[in-house]
Image 1: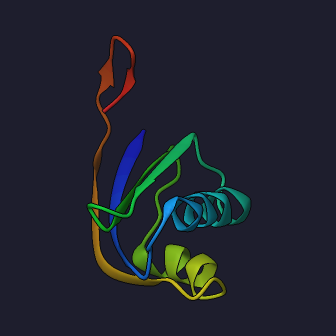
Image 2 (image 1 turned 180 degrees about the vertical axis):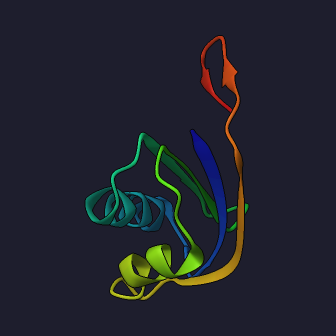
Length: 82
């Protein structure tokens, strides 16, 4: 399992967060996505090995811009992935 932390520019409200999460979920096979307008990021969990371009293709259509990209192994915890 992989964890991706993407910096996102342009999220202003809760609907923006939902829009980013749904766009990623529709464009890429994921386990979970959680966006935060306050942190200006989205955290994505997936079994796929992806790069920034894979996310860019999905988010470019929405108007949100990726400002940073980080990939790390996800760690299984008692109540989910971290």
